[in-house]
Amino acid sequence: MTSESVQPVSGPSRRTVVAAVGAAGFAAALTACGSDDGTSGSSTQQGAAGGGASTEAGGSSSEAGAGGAALAKTSDIPQGSGKVFSDEKVVVSQPTAGDYKAFSTICTHQKCPMTDLQGDTITCACHKSQFSVLDGSVKKGPATQPLEAKEISVAGDSITLA
Picture 1 (cartoon, helix red, strand yellow):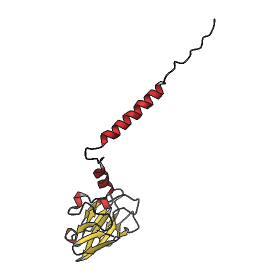
Picture 2 (cartoon, rainbow, N blue to C red; picture 1 turned 120 degrees about the vertical axis):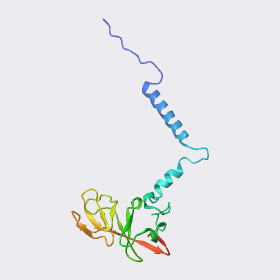
Picture 3 (tube, one colour; picture 1 turned 30 degrees about the vertical axis):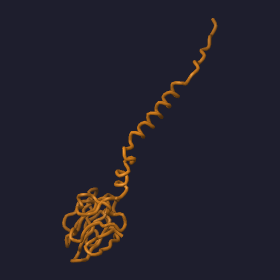
Picture 4 (tube, rainbow, N blue to C red; picture 1 turned 90 degrees about the horizontal axis):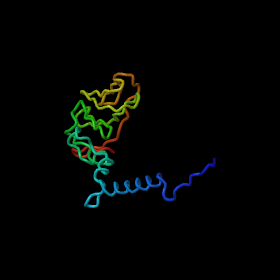
């Protein structure tokens, strides 16, 4: 008995063919993502990166949060309470008439985002820490550190993140 060796057939291997077809398919998919006007979804990407205010915040510009862009109107912020701007991770409050403050909505306990604002108290959904939106202080633990203050400026009736 003799052992015959099998010689490979010349030509591209199956792996080479799959890789080539995969690359061609990928290139076709990228081409299909473009639009007739030459933009390839750039408005969607820019909107996502632009940090626009959430619609539930109401009345704020689509460019809010981009350092110096309008976040809200002073009339949007109730006295003795505040308003959460989820996209910017900030709550703006009005402790007394004409006095506006801003704080991070990231809980100081374990960094959970907060959106539940009732009156002057914002509550963390993770562990139920409560903070005053009027001064950032802890009202109820487990958090022990106050909310981080954020810089804002008020010009006329417009509030902007600094």
